[in-house]
Length: 217
Image (cartoon, rainbow, N blue to C red; front, side, top):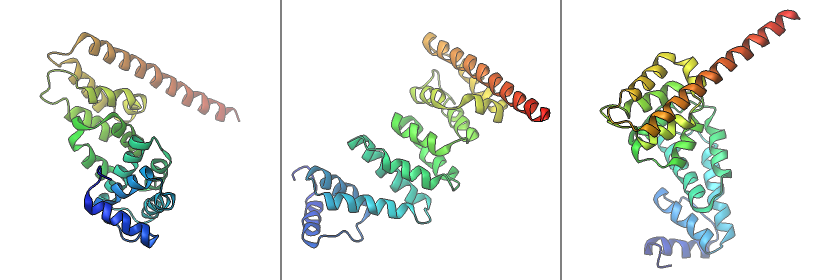
């Protein structure tokens, strides 16, 4: 119990007596969820999960998206459980998340790889937003930052080169002009652009073949 705040411990003990969860404040929710797992209180763990799932079924504003996204990330990082994040992404895929993603990426250089992974999944094919993020985080830089590298490696660059070719080219021109870019990073950039070109050509050929097949019939 020493690892938790006294107020949260008191709330936890009260919940054990009451036997149900009701109107838990956001700032207390994570600690209670954590305690339910640490102390193996299965009914409380399930109610915490049901609380998250219930919120996912409502109209989700950006503040609520942040709470849900961070809680699902916490579950992944702490307990390696991905189901809740999967449910959240499925709920959010039906709405426009551009403003939320843009806000979330404001502190891009401080994000962990798992955060970038799932914000990319949430963003889907929003190439312009992610290319702009890369470009903004190259501004006034002398070398290629770790998170920009990670973003470019995980993005669908073939799709982005087709959907936003001018912006795509600007990003990689900016990278090639970094004053202190390292040799390994330059090799990585060449590898990424070469692979992107190959995939883009393959995509065009497949589309052309499909059109040819339809014309035959």
